[in-house]
Length: 329
Ligand SMILES: *[C@@H]1O[C@H](CO)[C@@H](O)[C@H](O)[C@H]1NC(C)=O
Ligand SMILES: *[C@@H]1O[C@H](CO)[C@@H](O)[C@H](O)[C@H]1NC(C)=O
Ligand SMILES: *[C@@H]1O[C@H](CO)[C@@H](O)[C@H](O)[C@H]1NC(C)=O
Ligand SMILES: *[C@@H]1O[C@H](CO)[C@@H](O)[C@H](O)[C@H]1NC(C)=O
Ligand SMILES: [Zn+2]
Image 1 (spheres, protein in one colour):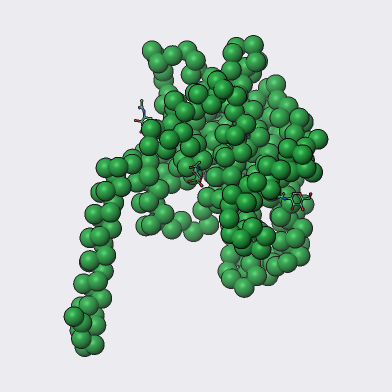
Image 2 (image 1 turned 30 degrees about the vertical axis):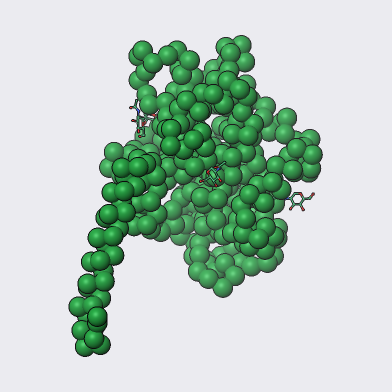
């Protein structure tokens, strides 16, 4: 029972109660699901402003598209690598790398979600651009995709002298294939891939990076898909099986040398970022219908490409030797 003049202590008490509850809930999750706990913990307590990632929805769709395209060998390997409690559902862990990137143990992964290219250059060069803010080479999303692809290539050699955690390699690869396809993840250095360009999305505050991570997807879901991600996913799948992209899928999947492919995918992203992301957008602008209508096709296409190419990599990596990549770093 709380009297008005006790308001203050009531508030405190309520807070304590709810935090006790959080702790209890947290313990429960931790005991049940190690990965799930991470998801719960970070989504409930840590709000990272302008987090650098496709939204949950973007990553989930990319991974669902990929998993549906796996050949039996890759499908089996993925199943074996995933922890039991996700029951073989890759997409439920595809945002794990966003959840752990601020943890001390995983701080090294933080620069692996994006690439900063020179302002207005609208190009990507691996040797020039793929490094972290201290200049350490390969520490960018293009380097990460190569890294975890080559780690997974050792999966078939068995467990005897594995240097790397193959489960983590699978989750990182699956996540970073989403990130490298998000155009604003290969953006300009000064504005941090659009993160510092604050603006309005329709009537609420946002920033340019977030518009491409999430706002466009959420608006599409609300306007056309009754807020149901599975309906949007079906539409995307239809469009690459017998719709607008069905003739393009072979060229999307084409890849002999993973290093070259990764460079091409990053180039595609920065070119879309320049032409469709940054173009005509100033800080303080209000983006609405015109921007949404003209950009939503790119967002959907990038989600599809990310998923199809992730499947391509996993199919090659886990396949019999003759179908595998000739080279990997
Ligand atoms: C797999 O996980 C995703 C993300 O949590 C979820 O949206 C989807 O419904 C799950 N799929 C199945 C078949 O459970
Ligand atoms: C590759 O992965 C290992 C750990 O698995 C890590 O130490 C290294 O920094 C990673 N490099 C890149 C470019 O991802
Ligand atoms: C691999 O990493 C996952 C997630 O961090 C962890 O739960 C698992 O125990 C690790 N496996 C091995 C063999 O170290
Ligand atoms: C699928 O293609 C149709 C045109 O045939 C288009 O109207 C629709 O927006 C596309 N959907 C997605 C999610 O790309
Ligand atoms: Zn990310």
